[in-house]
Image (tube, rainbow over all chains, first blue to last red; front, side, top):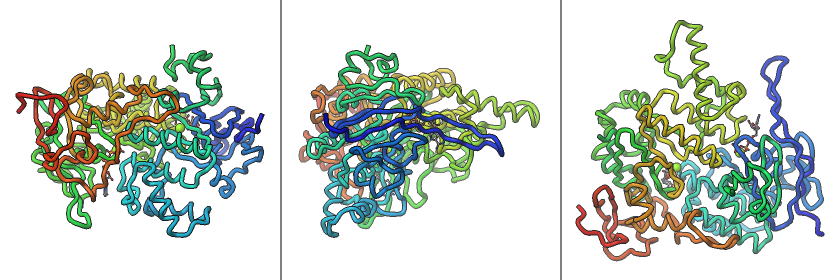
Length: 254
Length: 331
Ligand SMILES: Nc1ncnc2c1ncn2[C@@H]1O[C@H](COP(=O)(O)OP(=O)(O)OP(=O)(O)O)[C@@H](O)[C@H]1O
Ligand SMILES: Nc1ncnc2c1ncn2[C@@H]1O[C@H](COP(=O)(O)OP(=O)(O)OP(=O)(O)O)[C@@H](O)[C@H]1O
Ligand SMILES: [Mg+2]
Ligand SMILES: [Mg+2]
């Protein structure tokens, strides 16, 4: 048995919010959760709103610090906030694309930046790589000089996807990355991810409400409810023999 | 009776080589109490059209129209102040990225209470304050938020995205608008919650005659009560008709392509490549002349370099020189 690519061990998260001088409110967004993922596998996370899906995804990507537990990549503990260590290996696509883009710089510059800091490509190769990636996500070379506000929501989302794949990471974490995409572009992005998996063995973790997409691409599914993992298994197992009522509802099986 | 009547709306900006038409002669009519769905690929100008109706357009852009009437108001003839009064009173919009439209510095409770019109409140100062709070709570219940205290105290960054969408729906319906423009309002929700929101909107539609302009990208996931659908591509109107007409007998190649791409209709085996529409939507600086679908359309021929006129076959309208089935007797 090979060592899993990613291990989540007893990870939990609670938010503390001060409401007065001595009083505060604690939200337990994520109860201790553990699972593992092999290289090249695709994991879908499903659940109702507020069930802690984004919190889990952010912890895996290192954007949020867990209150307890740890994340291991190939058996090595990932330090939260060690971006140099992470960003080459794990990239995240956020749910709210507009808020995760820098509004002051052009699309091209935003995509060049990770290449400049993390690769040994010369400027011309960097430029070519950016243009090739723009094409991969269904944008055009002309979009290089656009600013985020000149793009529609779906186009902004595709810039975020481009930024995530441009460094060819080992794991891509996508929080509802398909919602602002129309069927044609969505199919194109799904094909792209399937290709990346085939060519480079990328693991893909994604949050989605769409049972159709999940059934099409996921190897494993994780169901969350009120911050708890309620069911976890292979797609076939969850489709043929779901244990929870919620699983049946979310996957649309009787 | 149409309460919203838009004829040939055009939005132009200045580009490096002359003006660029972001929206090209779009027409849209919404009858009183109608639920209308606007469908189109990403980047086809849906959000721009919605903002143009409300007047939230960069003042340097040129918005022209043969007609832009809301009830008995000619919106283009009003000055900005009058227009704000009319649209603020009668219309409401749910924006596409609700998180970015909520004020990050104020609690949800404060922002929601501000949306409740003062005229509706009863009693004197303290009573009014209490009344405002109860109404805000009731609004949250209606959009399916049970834990109203926690949400009212929270700041926008603390909300999960689905809850943020529910809050922005609550804000939009707070002053009982006559027209609700909803730009992809349920994308962060799972199907059960989405149908709950759809039920709420159709209830408001039935009980208060609220018209709805729903904006979405997926032709097969429209609100069930939709009366008519408008298909747009790249700022041009392609086809208008009832869901039955468009889903069962589309006349425009674009509608057919959108239908065939939908995940609900595909039957490719798992983990294999899905069909896509070749090419991508052009940037506004490099638009094809005539029908903008031309370069991506399988049926395109010589004539397509002239923009097709919107033709009408009973209630079914289409803008295509070569409709999918032989159409006679249109006007
Ligand atoms: N920064 C924060 N401060 C306080 N509470 C937070 C914060 N971020 C999230 N929460 C709370 O944690 C819980 C889980 O949120 P999370 O965003 O993970 O949900 P989600 O499953 O992604 O939901 P959705 O599908 O709506 O995006 C929610 O109750 C939310 O209010
Ligand atoms: N300031 C601008 N300068 C140039 N082009 C712009 C500008 N603002 C918007 N556009 C272009 O207008 C087009 C329509 O944008 P809009 O946001 O209306 O699309 P949409 O139909 O809402 O798409 P989505 O479904 O992805 O939200 C896009 O192609 C966008 O690039
Ligand atoms: Mg989320
Ligand atoms: Mg939009």
